[in-house]
Length: 428
Image (cartoon, rainbow, N blue to C red; front, side, top):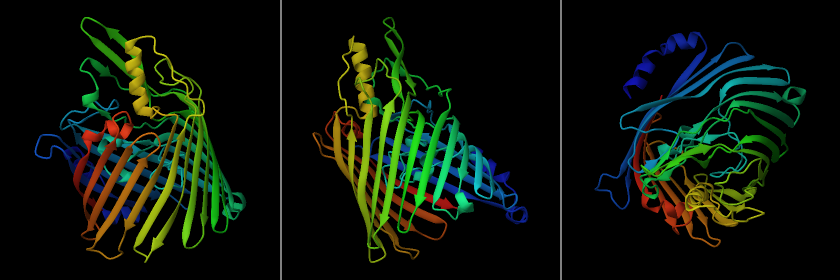
């Protein structure tokens, strides 16, 4: 935190920033999580850090945006291939650093950019561009999203008066998602290296229409899966050592979002069909093409209560297991099966989210989400959360990440990592 604190000293004073049309702010946070089955033992995670945001309107058509994050994680529970986590080490990343220009019906943005595609709460199968910083084990999506180095050209016909819009993206350096691995499931002789970034650019297109009380968008994506596949790098018997490398595999995807507002409730649909351009020997199934669907509704009660119920489908149309050629390959396939949730051809489930959000300060807010897969398995993720807004800047939080289910399902394999956390957030 000392390094991040020094960064704040470099920020110009607020009065100077106002003269230069610079808006700045951010957040400082800290969370402590302890395992539910071992609260009194040394099985905990501590994460803390801060976000700094700068925005500058050079003129009405040119804007500059910066968002940087620094964070520290101490966790004996998890193995994360993207980071060689060491106690006390501070990581710094740039989420956003971009310049945007607008003229008439055209907008152009270039640099490090965060995008968030999809209209559903909790699960977004059409969010093809975004990677997540899952190692933080927090409920705040702002802290987990990673940016990507891109150029975006947007066309708004009739200078925005038309309901249609078009975005074209070219991504030079893609975003990445942290793969969470329970350390108890990995043998001591297994080493996992950091993944290499794909050198081929990504291309994405989004066509949107905003109607009266409804809207939809179609998205096309050609790039890499943000959650990598593990492939064998090297193996030796004396000493016994297996080195695995996470690889980002090429894929094409088509997505569709639809939202309809019926005043008393809102109906949402989000779906994606993903085709893999390449398969690896260590893939669990021969044809990893898949369909992901989310559909449901959202409604409010008495202004302060809101709930969301969505059905979830995760389906592989051509599900055929790939026969391993050795026990070693079989173990790698099992690992990939767990990471990519390929243990079943079809997973059916639902996501239920309830919010209690009073508008006044010094009141408790409550959120409870339950993601359940019930078809041929028992797999659950519960995330209860209680917030207390002390004032406009300071917020305290009590939350849980509770995994339950069968041992061969992704959530069930993480059951002994179920944790309860205490956190504080200061927004400036």
